[in-house]
Image 1 (cartoon, rainbow, N blue to C red):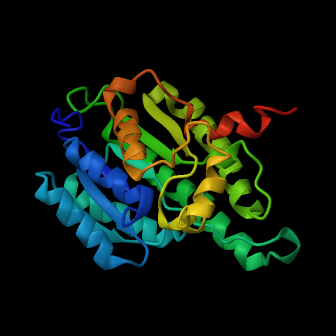
Image 2: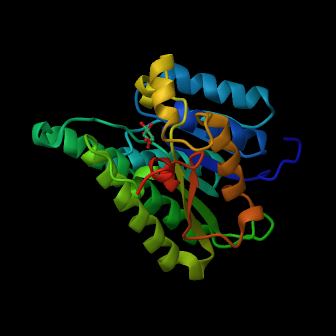
Length: 268
Ligand code: BGC
């Protein structure tokens, strides 16, 4: 990408040290944004991502914060505003899976997933919107007063046995995102979701690491390839930029067609 569509803008990517978050952080950096790479535990990986972004010519720092803890989110935003003056783009990406058959799922497994995947998005979106409203619209930065991208999943639509906590968190993100888009559209804040299918990252390694697993996975994906983190990075740049200025309240599926239910191609 040669055009710096996000030049002069500041972006926070939660869970930016690995997987999809890493690719998004790097893509936003390539598009010219200064990037805050948030991480919960892997400082070294987050520093690497920030270094890669700086090597590409954009500013970047890593900040540790558990997004499910209000006081840590407060202090992360405080640091961002102090260093960069404001925030333009929030990528609410941090998320995890704690899978179990439902009848064996512990309250801890349920709570952990809801805390990080859903409450984490609430806490970060609230701070971002407070900052967008404080700063106000500055047309030289962007046509929008602020942009929030929520990392959802095909599982905001497709039920997922054995992953009830995760699917419930993503179903809730759909309503969080749409309700925010409705509430803050009049203030020129855009809120959208990215709904990835199977993307080659550590979270779903078991689904792609052996040829057998990969072949099995392909029965769910009409387009017949796994997604790469870069695919999602490209979409995030589009949603963060003025190219998508008329898009708000949308769930954008990036899944090789997983959400069109390939199993029905010869059945039903
Ligand atoms: C999950 C992955 C899964 C994919 C498709 C994602 O939201 O995190 O583990 O491979 O959905 O089922």
